Length: 193
Ligand code: SF4
Ligand code: SF4
Picture 1: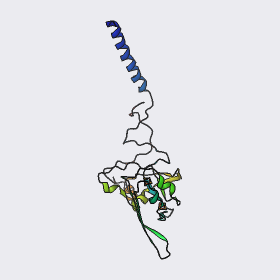
Picture 2: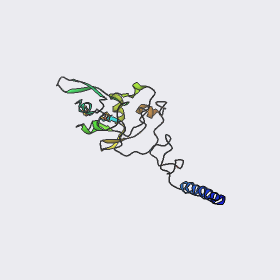
Picture 3: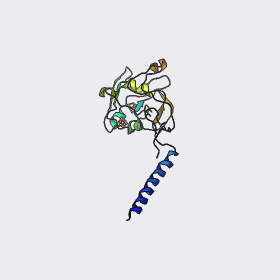
Picture 4: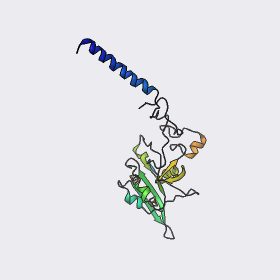
């Protein structure tokens, strides 16, 4: 191959490469400027499982323990006692989120619609013990449900990392967790495909 042929090939390659770049400048981005912008996840997304309550705020869980038995990785821990009418009363309901694989089986096997998969997925924490979600935390997150249960999943509203009281005060809540932003579309700052 002669010298001029090599130069021509080189120039052609550079021009082609710039054309690809130029074309992508005008394409709609498909990625998000995370964590400032978060995707609007559909109902049925498998984030962390949460406990659901009735309209009065009482947990729907009957402590039947089916979910704990069916959980493939055995991360649900339930304790209960029987009241004077021999009815089971839930004492503890813990899920170790560090080992939960978001499979959704617990929500699927619950006959009482008491547990559902949420759209909450940002669980990183500096302390491992914070990943053990107890009954109160799971219930609080479940009370953020909005809309119906679809495919064993719910959508939540508000910032899951702030308690409702903190939200009302407008405080920062858990300092090392960013605020959940409103559903958004991809930004122009995203990478194009
Ligand atoms: S969440 Fe459902 S399956 Fe699990 S113990 Fe409660 S009622 Fe039973
Ligand atoms: S989502 Fe799966 S792994 Fe996680 S608690 Fe439920 S059954 Fe267990």
